[in-house]
Length: 501
Image 1: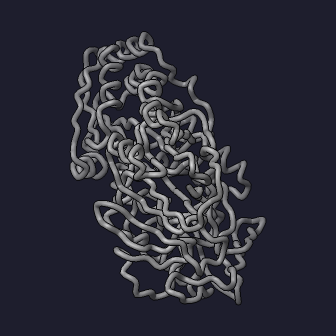
Image 2: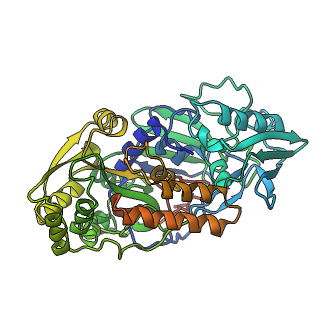
C-alpha cells in the first residue's frame, strides 16, 4: 500500500522548511491571566504556504496543517498524540475479524454554505477517495470492499483486515465533502469544521473565521490569521512588534531573544518529523553494507541536536510517536574509529560521495555531515539544488548517492516496504512484515510486526536517521490552548484563546 504520491514527495520536501529543529521534551503553553476574548483575532506564524487549497488533489503538509480538523473533517479524527477519536461519527465499532466498520453519523451537521451533511455525502466522498486515483492517498483505501448507508449508520466492509484504516480515515482519505459540490476547491472551501475560510491573500496570509453553524463546541477565537513568514528572524521581529501571537516552525536557538521581554515563551513538543539521510544502494560504494554502516557511525547525532538547539536522536525509521517504535541506538552508535575500520575493510579509502539536498534546508545539516564524514576519510560534496531538480533527479530517477530529506508524515513506514521508492531499499522480509502488520486485527500485534521490520531496516543500514524533528513553538503569554505536539503536520486551532487586555 502506497500512501506517497509524487506530489506528496514534493510537499514533504517543501514542508521541511518548517524547522530544522528537534526536541526532547514537551511543555504546555504559558498560562494566561484574564478572561478569554471570544471576539479575538489570533495571528499564527507559519512557514510553508500552499500552492492552492484543493484538499483532494494537492498533497502536502501545508494543507493538512491548517485545513484538516479546522475546516474539513472525517468520520474520525486524531489527537496530536496520534490517538483516534470520533468526529463526524458520534461512535464507531470494529468487528472482531477486522472486516466490518460501523459508524453512527451525527445529525444536524451542516456545511459552511448551509447544506446539510447526509449519509449519501459520506458514501459518495469515501467512494471518490477510493476510486479517484488523482486524489491524494486514494491507495490507502485499497482494502475497502463496500461503503453503504442505512439511515445514519455508515458501514464499511473490507476485503481483508487493514490495521491502518481508521488512521487513514482520520486523514485525507476520510475527508467528507458535499456530494457533487460546485465549490472551486483551489481557492475556496466548504467543510463541516469549526472554522470557515474567510480570505486568502496569496503570498501573505490565510484567514479563518469562526463557524457559527458548527455542530460541536464553538471555536474560542473569532478569527485565526495564518501569516506566512519563512524567515525566522523576520518572524521574531514581527512577534516583538506585537504582530504575532504564535510562531510555529521556530528556531530553538532564538529562545533567549524570543523570551527576553517576557511576552513569549518557547514551547517544545514532539513530532513525527524524520531527518533522513537516504543512501542509494545502487552506488558502487553504498551497495556495501559496511560503507553504509561506516557513514552512520561517523555521524555524531548528539552534536546535531546540540547544533539545532533542541532535539531527539533517532536511529531507526519509526519515531517515538508512531506504533512500532524501539530505541535502536545500539545498532550503529557514534564511533569514528569503527567507521574507519569498516571503510578499510570495504576497500573504500578516501572515497568521494555527493549529497544532493533541497536548497531550502539551509546549511546546518550539510556542514555537520561534511565535517563528520571528512573525519573518517569520506569527502562529501554538497549539491544544493532547487526543488524541481531534486524531485526529478532524486525522487523520480533515483540519480543520487546521498540525499537528506525531512519526512514529516506520521506512520509512513510503508516507504521502507516499497522497493520502488527512492530509498532503493528492497528486503522481502520487511515487505512481508509490513503486510502482516496491515493484516493484524490486534493493535499490539500490528505494532510488533512494525517493530521487527524497523529493526531489520536499521540493521541493514538502509539509511541514517539524523534526528527526530520537533514542534518548536513560540507562544505569547496571553494565549492559551495552543497545541505543542506535531503541529508541523496538523494544527487544530479550535481551542486557542486570547485573553482580553
